[in-house]
Amino acid sequence: MIPNFPQQTLNVADRKLLKHFHALSSANRETLLRFAEFLVIDSAADNEESLKRSEKPSSPQAPEVIERPAEESVIKAIKRLSATYPMVDKSTMLNQTSDLMTKHLIHGQSASEVIDQLEKQFEEAYQTYCAEFTI
Image (cartoon, rainbow, N blue to C red; front, side):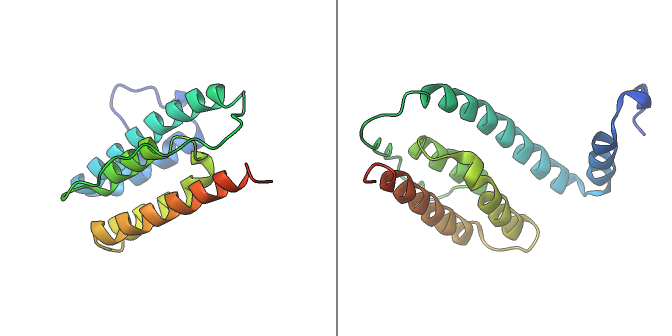
């Protein structure tokens, strides 16, 4: 229960999220908050992309080359790859991306391994996008 916050305004999903949030360690709470912020930013970017996509281009858009830094967090890598491949439908990537994030955060897979897999998934999604233009 949150002090000074009217509980009747929370729906079932809100209460469930708060329950899980409060069960986490402070480090995991911070990670969850950063991931939630990423999803909000990514969702806003998706809305902008949807508006841009209303007119389909006649040829595939080239990726924006953004070099991978030597030290990079998984969340920053997702942001970099989203900027590199703005034409890729992020809603189709969400499941794969969140699965990899879970492998990193919960199961302890190294950031570099997860980022390698993310890069491969984004590249594959880009190839699928390009294939739509050859049909």
